[in-house]
Length: 543
Image (tube, rainbow, N blue to C red; front, top):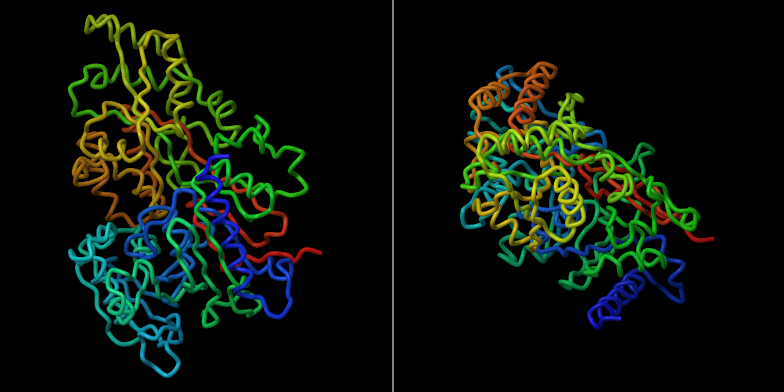
């Protein structure tokens, strides 16, 4: 075994031991307390616990346990009360007035200098938290969330008002993002930049210990305000323990041994061990593992940079030929063990309102050949070649596409790079074709159309392809003023059809949430954003 893997496992055992010590009394055994702790591994690490920097799933998962905002989303992506118990929206859809609960308390901390080391959240705390979000000195990557906000103000302790510059129907969903969490000024002032490693929030769990790259421990917040339908206080668990084993195979081995409770997603290193080619759990694991799947608001795709000099990339004929030239169904069956849905209906993913099964690109090699032939006759380029940039996690998918397209006369080079290099080059327009994911920040199809709005060209926005279409832009801008959901979704479908028609991308598949849990884990539900919500989770005690 590699030295770093052995070290990681030793660190993992240390956290298990630590968590047992956290609750043990007398001669209680590990088995007596194991059901009180939910354990998972975050192989890609966590860089901060400050919600103002919750830009990726690992950070969002951890900060979901520690913080609350004005509103939250349920598993069906419906907006629900959180610290705001209710709200009103003005007739012109510009003014949102939130009424806060009056008994939500921050986690106990000496920074509060009160008798009980805490205090109640008031509207001024949201004013402070939003100010911090847009403060250039803080440099939060989430400052864009408030770009359409004209002003916000605490009218009194329990009333917080937000006024928009223009109507934005998805605004409430936007407010559910972890960036918009409430944080206490006292704790931020106490820690300064070290607040990232000493979070104080209102969430179901409170911060206990973080040894970066080794372990993170959260404890039950005894002051948490939410209750279940039987009026029992949440959360049920006593602790959450997170390890940072960097190797997915080692993570799987720890799960198979019962040392962690949960595996998220399907990694190539163990997919065939756990699942059959059709995506079912193998018999050997049925007695110890539960498998759950659900829609995931993530579209996987290849993007073409349309402002580059590569002739093949600029050709709509070749872009369409690639779209027709490989079998997405076969790709998912053999490379993804049946996890995912072929992306043959545009960019808006299955599971999101606005997805309407419209016709996109299905496998049609004859049509692909004709398009390539037409391109060659038009340009005289008898050896069209395209290079696709990808990271190692998606190398097998890109090589599958490479083999399929070479059969019909298109040369493909698969260029494997580190994810960080791809991100940098994608933003700067240095990649002709790149493999990418687009995961919803908030549950509205507008989120999947903004990468094709011409005013969002990188590096000033998420339009990595530099796609520009006047009709698309007009529909996109008009959609913000439409309050009728069905009419707005019809606009979204029209915009998606324009993307299909001009092919600035190759949609690969609409992803799925795939979760494996130990049999003792109860109450863990899927949601289309694949967020980890642990406040209603419990574990059955081993008999």
